[in-house]
Image 1: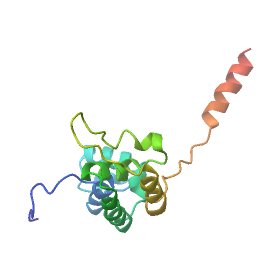
Image 2: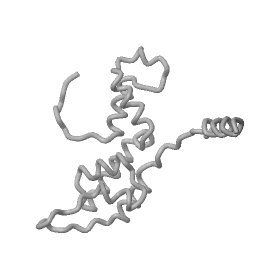
Image 3: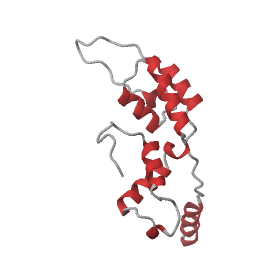
Image 4: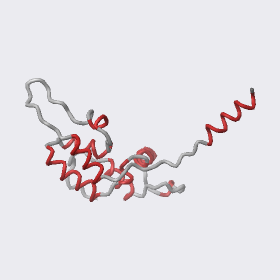
Length: 144
């Protein structure tokens, strides 16, 4: 493997997940066969549960290009892609507010949220069933 650029910048969670997939990471039970470290599997398991698992390279690139119109910093774009905020409350901590003496910038949060909704796929759904909670309730009910 040849290193083209040692530090090209920060990566999105999608890019990290894509890299781990290319190295053989998967949900397969035969993980011992793939040349992946345990720590990399822990990262993989986390990223599969996030917005990164439903994103595509095209959607991420298109979103990043469209965000340039809003004069948002690269780090802010990266965080929006990784966190996929769905409301102004979730977006507010991502967008940096100017410090005293700096020129104030107007950010169209509604426009950014509309872009998120249109270009980035929805968050993955979890198929958790509340069976464990029901069992605890019946056990408590039987003891009384």
